[in-house]
Image 1 (tube, rainbow, N blue to C red):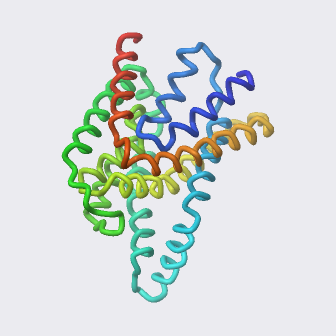
Image 2: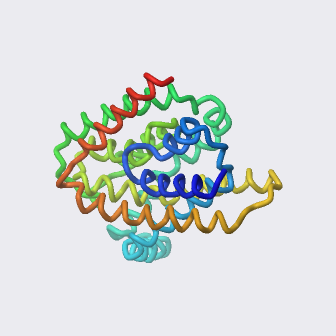
Length: 264
């Protein structure tokens, strides 16, 4: 793959990772539609590291408080709101971690079809519209209970199906539980941190077992490009979310799904 093609994929990863439109679907579809060679597993890891750095840097103050209070809760057995939020992020990651380990091969071999992506894009786009329309939007992320976390965690596991969108389905679940749009998005972004770490570790193991030569300069450039794009995306998405709502992303998903059905 040419360097300019890799840069487009890095920018695309940064732009779509945290929007409710499915980054995995776009990274699968663009090379296929454009007739490009596969970018390779190593490059996928690099651009995911970039988006991971972006979300960690953006929420660095919140993560510092969450980490501090979580560590204290292990000693004192007492939880603050920040410690509880940290526990919720960890617990909410369990379903997708288990499903990823159990069904990794099946997902990679059987669920990367453009038609599956099309139906998932359409179906979960309509579900996002319904949740956004029906939600009372009165709660924040600190009001979540264990049952809520399990519901969001199971929803996140469904996002292993390409086209679903991890951020899209977790925001949808949050809206269904009555979270405000910004609260649902913030919790979704925090929940992405352990998921990206786990996915990156699994991909890294595959890469190590492959014994392939790694173009580190391309990886660093891709990670930087995806990281900067992801940081800006998080910032403006949260800033504009309450003004524009979910409708632009829902419309985009419906158009993309119809396009894929017509093409494939």
